[in-house]
Amino acid sequence: MSQKLKIDVYVELICPWCLIGKRNLSLAVEQLAVTLPELHVELDWHLVQLVPQVPREGWPFAEFYLRRLGSPEAVRQRQAQVKAAAAQAGVDIDLARIQRFPNTTLAHRLLALCAKQRAFAMDALLDRLFAANFQRGEDIGDLALLLDIAQELDLDREAAREWLATGPAELPAEPPLVSAVPLFVFNEQLALSGAQSPEALLSAIGKQLRALA
Image 1 (tube, rainbow, N blue to C red):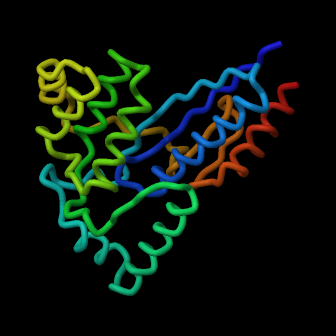
Image 2 (image 1 turned 60 degrees about the vertical axis):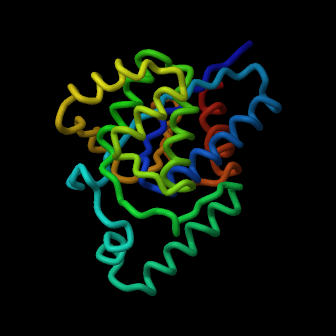
């Protein structure tokens, strides 16, 4: 008898831990396909805007993190921590290429359009936006870049332009339960936060499935 597992995933595009968490989740789901082929896994992505006060043009990346963490040494330590976790997950992150800390409103709107028109492409769009920010050093708050990305994924460029231009000035706030990202919620019952390892995610999934048995 087949089982269904719904995973709600809350992420923010400017958070490297969300990129790492997404990769680890993909590895966990791939493992589930081998060990539990009868299990149907449904992923539902939710975007959280961590720093909504960022202006449309963004902030200088280095200056933002220096203000946020307080000292160059603290920045170096945090970046080393991120790089180590990314390497363990098999994710390329090149923080040295990032020049702007972007406003993610338009990128979130583009994801909403994708969910509406080409839901099957959501995973690819998330990967492309994460790669733009963390691997290519591109400004994902830039309208022209987002339209190029939309076109790459076969979204109509002019429809995307109109959608991005006419959306709300701010994104709706997420429910209060989302205080940190990434956040994984299994069947709307069991929640796990942080860039968890594939093993930790599989353990949580196993616990949830046993509770349903």
